[in-house]
Image (cartoon, rainbow, N blue to C red; front, side, top):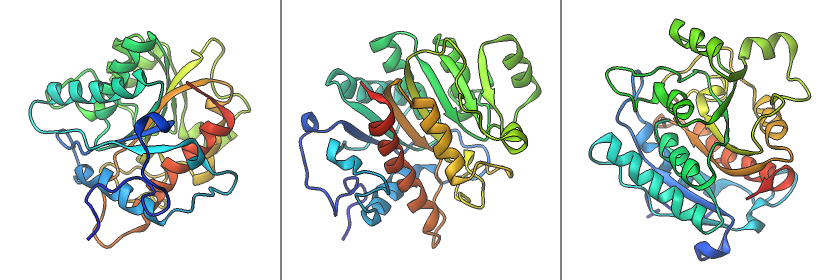
Length: 290
């Protein structure tokens, strides 16, 4: 019987020590503040199980040559603030070894803990966010740790944010983007004018964290998510944005969040696993891994 949390690419790769791997895959099955469809707590397990169907050749290179180690899942019981603290600790452990944490969500709130660890280790960094939603609310349904508040918490930490694929904003979020340095390339702009050669603005930090909410993809590609929005990114648009954003920059880590598996529908789980692995490939080829 397959483990609930198998190693990433377990059927292809031998087990290695964390010190031998560039990528530290950290499952975080968090589901506490979902506000429409549920199921994100099952996302990390589904990604890990689906990764067994991946080829190590991603179409361009073999990212697994850099080493992939899978950590035990972060415990997600208890108060949300405490869970965020555990996520921060798990992320910090990988950073302290000079490795790249790769968080598998779980709802988008998992990113808050990772960004707190980055702030402690590196100071202010750039956040590249692929998402359908701005996630810039100060609170949502009474919680500052809601998945709808993740990028507001990033701004509060002093990080610089770039958003791609956004197509759903509240009026207060629209106002916030006008008065704060939240750079963006929204889905409508991409549909009308395509993706520019340079996506990040001048002066954007050299160290970046990449956060990918799977609902940034169009629902025709990714229906298994709690808050789908029409008009999303295609598969190759998503990859192009990632490639252009990370090129020549120091990537300190990334996450893929908000997969909510649908029973009997396997392709979104596999697509999320492929997104994780393809992002590893883009980073090892085009970015500075540190």
